Image 1: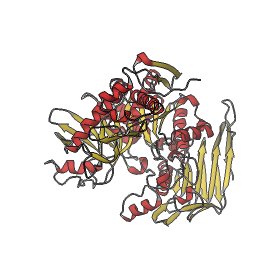
Image 2: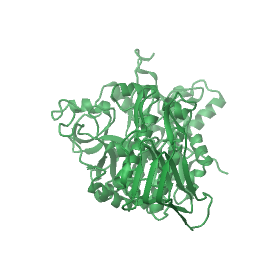
Image 3: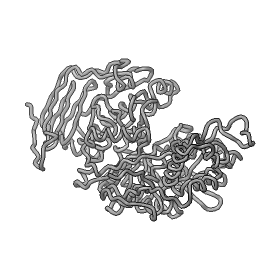
Image 4: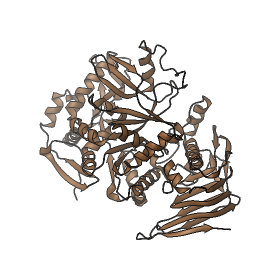
Length: 624
């Protein structure tokens, strides 16, 4: 076995290991450097790191510097050079938007029930076989009140599959619709989450995905900085390091050779998504359709944004020297930027026609054209524009240099990729209703309750589940079933300070339907589906309704591998499931403030997950 650290370095000092056609080529760092470590540190004004070291400490420092120099695109010299310029600009109060004029960007807005949406969804479905997926999953769940990594959280209490499992099931469902062509998944982890993510995948056998479809890429840290001269923080031969930001995903896509490997395998698009947005896939084909029809190099998925909402806004920036970018501007920068112009003297205010900000909200779901993406990664190493946010100490250091209250570092953001593109690149956005594409888990119950009290989105585990259930209910209604899902609520109350109106507990697993068009395909014309407000309905696998389904209680229908279930006539009445307020005896319920009491359930389950072969057995449910 060969144990290596992975990074991009000069071809003269690498060993390439081909992993698989979907995983690309990983590039291993060797210990060879262009100049001795001590010489490099002295030339970069980092001699303080060498003072008073024992041989063991010196060896440790040399090894770490060698590793960092290989991991960072352009090496430590490039990092320190960028840091000095950014820190000087920060100290001088330089405006990063100087010379830029903000304009309302051009993009597409789709309403889910419109013909335009249906057309884009149909077009995008043809692009799914040519799409790779990238999950940015570097976060722990501690601040959410959960002891684990965020991707191991369940979206539903009704069906406790974790986010990672649901994401992979969505991809596998797309893969099935694409005729079985394997769709690759890359997952960016951090020091905190890497081991736990790998263990989660191993524990669940990759949630049904082939092992060589998945590449887990651990994000490296960057040196922390002491002062405005960008001197690195360190002690006893160890340089202090900190996270660099999720913009590193582009560097990793280059270092692991994935962009090149995927393009060589015939893929055309890359979809980037976040770790706890359970709605990320529900309208993806429509977004791909827009990308294909416009041949976008970048297509940001956006939602209508309330003016001054704490969500970045997509903005067109036009510079006096001719440069133009359509890019995300963070919410705390957007309002002052707009106020500095004659076109927007009042700043970020609602458009009187729509009631929303004219600058759509960025949700960090991106579809990138792979051809341009690979070219840009080859040119830049995947290093996006960096920024710095130091907190200065009240007094300067002993030598009069401005120092920080605590070491800082350079940071970067995934959504700043458009800043690397040439003027000929096609950059746009697709705006969707928030209900169909965006409901993240960001806050613990206490913070969520505080936000709710201020009429802000709580964005907690309970609201994420509520919104996912609402999409399922709405998709069933839009699928054209005569009768439909009741307009009432399964629960209406305040749970641990968060007001929630839970719709009927309808859970559509990805293997049943990920999108609206797939839901419509499961409900045959002239079928009648009636679900009361107090009911719970879970559908998983190849389940079709071709007749009448009446539900007043709880029903679970699962078609496992090798099975197809057709509901011709079925009426279920039982005690069902009840939502109850609770402080919880597990993280799952404590995070929500409620639990589900399963009083009585009708279960219809066919198929064996271990079944082999392509034979499908059809099971017809016809209870006269």
